[in-house]
Length: 216
Image 1 (tube, one colour):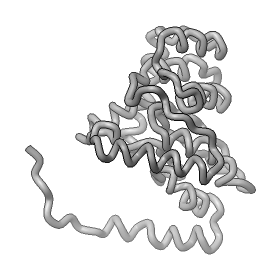
Image 2 (tube, one colour; image 1 turned 90 degrees about the vertical axis):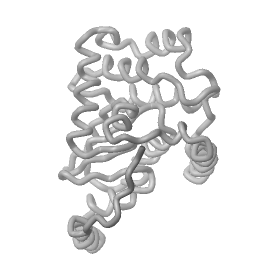
Image 3 (cartoon, one colour; image 1 turned 135 degrees about the vertical axis):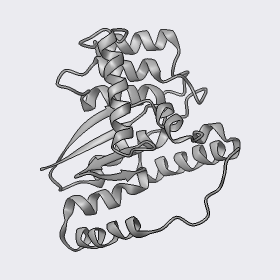
Image 4 (cartoon, one colour; image 1 turned 45 degrees about the vertical axis):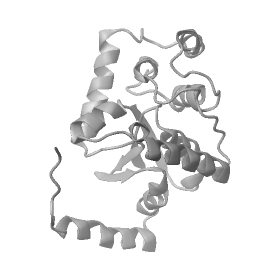
């Protein structure tokens, strides 16, 4: 059985779509998922990138395309009242719910639905309090150990080469984005598709860098 480390941030519509569609995308395969909420902003800062919601035209396209994907996949989605928002409280709540080293699917799904299925303000204090009451976390989200767990997960994602969410690590390979689910399936399934992916994978390692653009 293969283990999938699923790096996510509740701020990402594609992380929600990938989370919701994953069981269907990998139907019939043997695997386990370890959910690792991370601070997407921390990944962006490390790699020197802006988030999709920080570039106005890209922000508009992102939500139009995400809503279309949701309809196509049959995944419920209603945009939050404001985006971007502060996801830190949601991420800490998820780690506060961890009972065996990581939050389970129920906790992660409940938080995702809080953001992407309500049309409300995701970081509203009253709604966050109600969400915490529903999940009844094992730890206080404000505890130092919970904050440290989130930091370690984010640092671990960076060390593994994760640059965006959703990100999936299997056998040391990174699969990024909702549209990477077919590649992830091919890797897990093996056979002719897995062999084709194995043949493609190392080709990029030999690709040299050409002109490099200077920023600033």
